[in-house]
Length: 189
Image (cartoon, rainbow, N blue to C red; front, side, top):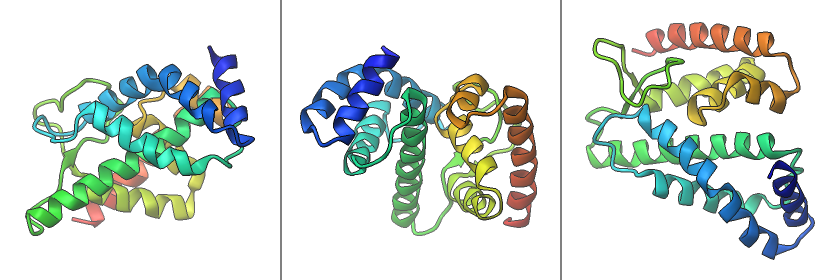
């Protein structure tokens, strides 16, 4: 499967639009899993469904045909960034509709449970995006780890493979990035 995906990505990259038609059914189930994980961290009454998140992210992926795809993990890491963009845009639209009466709440925790635990601090998704953008300015590598871990639900081994770094280094980056983001979010209150 991973070889087929890499082959299709390379075909698509070389200008074969039919490769994209073959690619979508192969990656759809995994993208839905990532979308369910991403939405599982959102509030329970979130209006965006996993299918809609996948389709919107995929539509944003289509213009990136010229990307130099390294492998399967690289593809899903890019999809994680696109899902982040979709969720943040959705939060912005919702906030605009509510005329600034509060943002969508999410948690910044390594837990993969589908719902926020009672008593766990919740964060505004727009503030999280702002803080993550600030982190990217000073440490793009750690910001990318957060994006892959939080928004795509990628595991430490998957992130290590994508970034070509040891797992212990990814764990350290995740821990330090979470601490930095917690401080930054506290300052943004």
